Each structure stands twice: as structure tokens, then as C-alpha cells.
Length: 301
Image 1: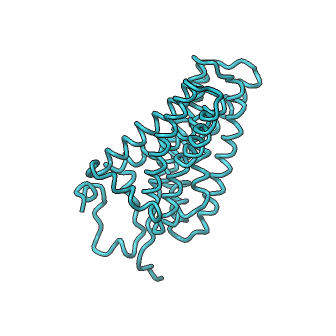
Image 2: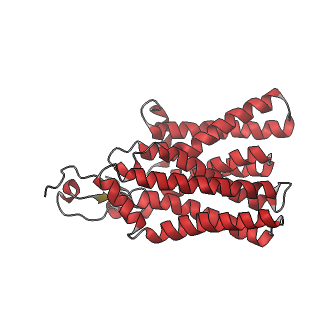
């Protein structure tokens, strides 16, 4: 057993894990925080790349590509006990979402780089269009990938929802809009259009999150307990303040204010973008932190 997991996993009584709801810790506590960061930067990088394609921002495209390659890939490598053996993950793409995710990142690294090069050297050609389409598809897969991985973990009912990949994509696009706001302060980006998109995706994220939590209450006692921990327990603060207030309410209000005033304010734009990024990090943190494994031997009353 990896000695890091022994330090990260809380000490439990003998057989307690069989009859009690056990918190998931390997992806969010101790060394597992690198998994959390890798997931967040995968969402952010994929969403930023897609948003940058729409706004035709070369700086945004490069930032999205670099976020996935350097930050998502880097944190995954740091988390591995033996990074030199990561290539073995390529061997099971038919059965393993971990293998598929590594393939997505590797292909995006290649075609994203080819898209950037073709944009600079051969703009408007068929090669640029081909690489743009391939890079966009792969960026979408990278953004949604963590949702597929979590959905595949059968022992955690709270994650067994088809909404997870869609949620990860929407939150990734929100993160991309936040970074584009910052890039637009120095580049030729229509910030008014960015501000008009933000409330739409913020409303979509709130609606999907509410639907996800509501549907989770019907996924069994373990998932229902996870929802209660989010809404009323120890994770209520990061959910309501981090995801709700910072990640949704404030950015929606400030975006609508600047659109109606027809005067994007640089200081308010920076604060809005930071708030949206806080919401992105908080969302993923809450999903990983509140997850509970179902007991192998259900208790009886």
C-alpha cells in the first residue's frame, strides 16, 4: 500500500468501513489535493480554450493550452507515486476512464499546438480549420473528463449522475469567461459580449447544480447524506459562500450592472473574474469533499 494513503486515510475501527458511510479522502486530502487541482485546471483549461475560439483570442488559446499541459498534467504527475511509469495508463483506454483521460490530454497537447501553429503560419487554410475542430473537440472532452471519471466510481452514489460531465463543462466555460475578462483588459476582446454571456452560463450552472443535488437525494442514503452535508453540514460555507455567493450571485449582479450601464469597469471586471474562479475551485472541492462510500454491509434497524 502507498504510504501516502496510510497517512491520508483516517484511522477507523476494525470493519467500520463495512457498515459505516466512509468519506472519500484520497482525491482531496493530503497528497490527494493535487487531484483536486488537476481536475480544476482541466475544467478551466478546456473551458478557456473553447471560449477563446469563440472570441478569436490567440492569447486565450495559448493560455488554455498551457493550463491543460502544464498545470493539469503537472499536478497529475506530482500526485503519481512513480511519475516515470505514467505511460502505463495509456494501455487500457477501452476499459479505463483514467486511460481515456490521458489520451484526451495527449491528443489535445498535439492538436492544440498544431492549431496554434497553423493560426500563426497558415491562417484561413484548411489545415487551420481541421486542427481547430479537432482541438475544440478534445478541449471539450478534457473539460468534461473528470465528470466521467467520478461518475464511473460505483462505490460513491453521490457521483453516479449523468449530469456531472455537463456540470464540469459549464463550470469550465464559466472559468474560461473569467480568464477572458482578464485578458480582455489588455487585448482586442469585446468585453460587453463576455459580460452578456456570463449571466446566462451562471444561471445554467445554478440550475444544473440544483437539479443535480435534488436528483442525488433519490440515489440512496449515502448520496442523500452527502447532500445534507453540503446544504447544512460542514461544507455549507464553501457551498453557499464559495459557489453560491462568490461564484454565482455576485458575478451575475456585477455583469448585469456593467451591461446595463454600458461601461465595463476594469476594477469590477477583475473582482468579478476572481469571484467566478473562486466559485469554480469551490464547486470541485465540495464535490470531492462530501463524497461518501456506501457501506458494504448495510446496518439494520
